[in-house]
Image 1: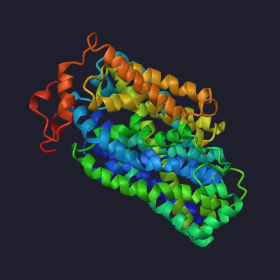
Image 2: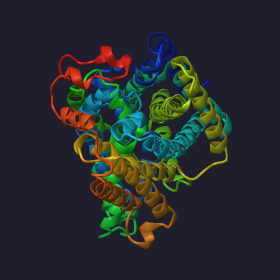
Image 3: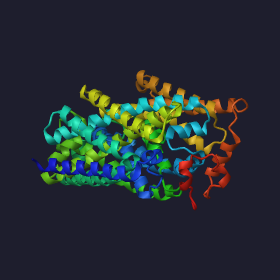
Image 4: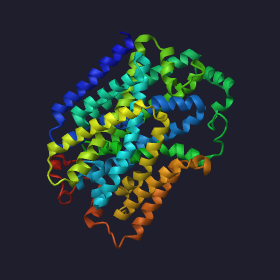
Length: 511
């Protein structure tokens, strides 16, 4: 048994152990299973958010983009660098406070409570499930490819093992297992990618020597305009590259639910510092390793394996295991969050919301059944070899961001945002983003689908809300709650009336 495989086995056992521990301390009711009891501190909140956001894309898609387009890939990195901080700054404290005042314990339920209408839930839930399934598919494929390369197993067997471990600890421990395992995985991700980058730089003789070697292959790769200068002046595409992983995060239900799980609203401030540190260390490194792979492992048949191949080439055997654990950490930290959130939507936002006879135990069981079902379907489709990981991730992120970013932001920043505006924004944004992807707006119009989708979504929110202020006014209780969410003060007692009884003990004394 090789050293890399031993590291991976130890890592997988440790993650399942986290699930077993979380099952004992945090899954007694819906709040425990879905939000970990709302007791997460700044470090866990920040690194859980960032590792969930990064996904297997960073080890496959980012490396591939750096390998094929050089410094053009840094447009995505620049957007990504600010994504976590924007998320925590724009939504973090306000969403945590407002969700508590509205008695919300799920990201989709939060939208219905803020924009009171059953149609908000009926529209939001299917869109979220559709996009998260595709994103989940990308994680399964990434995990299978990485595990197959290190262990020598066939892709199908590697997929079975990777999916099995992810499902095991998500199934057992709910949000608490996901949060603490993501925290551990974030640390492993940073150590792993920095180790690869440092070893790669040593291998090529430093960054300057690496640049010289890349320039000899294609000088255009050292510019930010693409391998053939095809993006020179194409600002409609470049702006999309900046937006997709910066504000796109604000529309991911499986990410923003992390704000609701913080122990208190003020946690968001400190969490922003942790998120910034993680981003600065981790994000540029993945793209740089992809670029250096042009020198270290030229003529790769599959550019998505660039970082894997570099690791195998420049690291000693014992280190490959740790690095592979880091790569699997990036993949698993997103897959587990996607599975849990999908289970949450199916159990709490659909089953519990519309079933006449239900209980906390039944909802948890429905969530676990959904996790298992999605994992099996995703596993089967991953074995059929779907499109590249990069393409799937960008597609899912574009649609999720276009559908939900205005709804989540306006929920806490604009008191006039109403039900009609939210429904219009979600529908128009999702349809616009999907249409732009299918019609290849990048080539046809010179505009990235994210630019089209988010623009239409914002416009629909503004027009829909302003045009229907009289027919669909925002309830005074919600307007007052939104105003209160902007203050750094304890929640007034009268605004907690009607709160989910399970949240009463979580009312903060200080902010």
